[in-house]
Image (cartoon, rainbow over all chains, first blue to last red; front, top):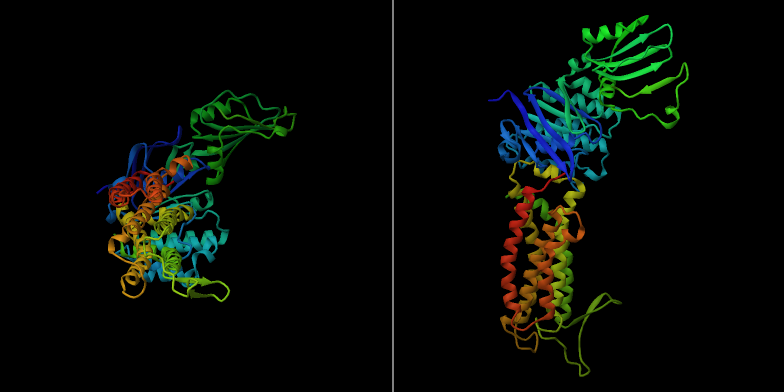
Length: 316
Length: 229
């Protein structure tokens, strides 16, 4: 038995001539909560759809719970729950009808658990899906996903469009319900605070490529902001590997660096700053700095900077 | 196949079948010598100037097979698209296809229920009309079972239309015109029926069966190899 719940090998998908996911090698250990991050269009949803067999990869393959995603047997599929983006459900059905319909496909259906979740969210079983709010639909989708007692839960942006309270309530319920039994969760999200709260490991996709696959804390430690304060205008900084952004703000030069090694620290100290401040970033800031890419200042801000003004330069 | 999925599909499409059955029933009622009176919301018997009942030749009156074809093909078209496009619009392919059931079973369950609705909704009024036509004393026309052939062919083309529409809804095509390519054989059958070439109607009925088999095979292939993005 593999120690990984999900393994992908060179997973690639093109839409037309555009590569959406490129050579994705992903390994998600069993029992892990894995957050898949990326900006819009980074390829997260396509990756998840390839994992669940909804989209056919052009190259490479994916294995879930030891079975090829494209040829997944009904038995293995029963061990995997999938909540697609937008929580699609049959709009004309009531919660009871949805429960009966979904239950009929599973041997391990836990009706008590489903009932508990419905009661927890104070939902009426007679209510039709089309009359529910987006948050309520998300709650139903989650309850339907969890009730069959899945070993692997895949959620595509489960909190998209939900208000803060529902979002937090939903995430906490999810984690309580699943993690206590050591299940594996893979979820994509735009809400970095949610990811930071629950994910053991993260993967960051940029333009279809998995750029980061690391424990969450490790990634946060790797990305740091260094503020160099000078007596006068900061001296120019030569191109240095690992610098994600480089901003001159009056007498200060603010750098975001990935992996502040001794070598890089020596380069910065050679500029003779008066003070060097190293600031740890939260996941959201670290993610933004990592994925922002080439900055595109507004035309107004693109004017030549005067003394005391901020200039934004292209990261090296 | 999944019983609960078949029930779900029947629950979503039965009313389309009911509407078609009522429309066809209304048409057949007129063929039985009744005329709807919209002012009194009732039916009255059709009589000629001598006060005798006017009842057209069952199944062979002009326009009969075309009427059956219009209703059967229309129903097939709507049910086929309904079962596929509604899943796409609601995004529920992703929900449905992740159930622990082979993709083939999911699609076959849908096809069975869709064929049931299309077949039964047209067959029941036609059978009732047939029983009436076979009952002595109901009309003053000769009647033999072969006279139903053209209607049966129209009914079969309705089923082929359903399968073609289902395939159209399943296919991911870049252009609407190419998406509708599966309807080409149906169009051919329809034109042949409207043309009413003597001696061709019965072979036409047999020809729908291999086309149905091909359409089902292509539907299953498409369902397996398309992206549900």
